[in-house]
Image (cartoon, rainbow, N blue to C red; front, side, top):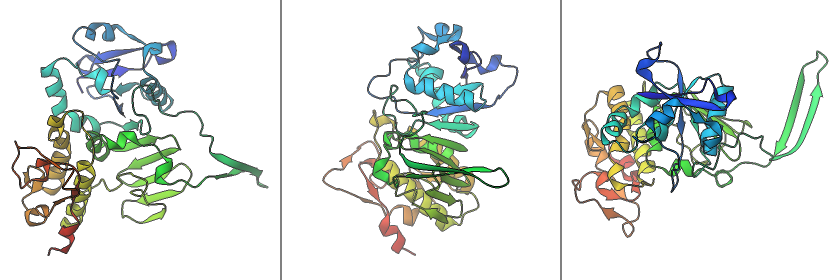
Length: 327
């Protein structure tokens, strides 16, 4: 990224925006924030506020989601954090286009993505306070002095976890490209990386082979299959179709973002498969990628500027189940 937020003075009530070219380390370790802007984005960097933000931002002026993300990053030992609305000059087309092209590498090079999964806007926060869903806790100490506790709580299901962030179109590539994600939800914390998906209470445990203990991550509304390396071509294709079915049901503030928000995913898939992209489809699996259908024809809309053979030409949910029947 061209800019990062320096959190070194966070405990003293200030953070500042810095140019990465001015840092001693060419690529310092940094975290990223994945979040919903909401209908009104009150705090953002513009050409008018750029110098002011470089001089320093008061922590008390930050929206709650930003403040919580800063707090979480500091607790985990990070000095730098990337937040799109503050690290990209929002009213500069030139700056936005340059940073948008780097979006894939920004998330891939991030040490950790903090995901404000249950927050619908900047004021929703990251739910850092302890969750109160525990029914009863039993603590004991063993003979050798080891202390443990057993906690009973309500069983989690997908509808118990608010996930407005996972409905955003841009967020799918943030999920797939990030090396590690900390999902901070209204129910509990979830950990996701290229090797596993784990829940704070142990009700979900899935590794990169697909074997799992407990609840299904997809049943909870998460995309867990995110690593296409070292997979068979059929498995990779199935993962791509799963991503597309999920992506097609997500929302966009601007319809023109549907293709740019897919660019990072296409680049990631291409690098790992050496395949050639065709507007959301792939040369080596073209006969299968063409086997999409519209989930609800009555609700679907047509984007006339795109050819009709690609699923991106349709506004609405896409179904790839018929591809399973094709040899």
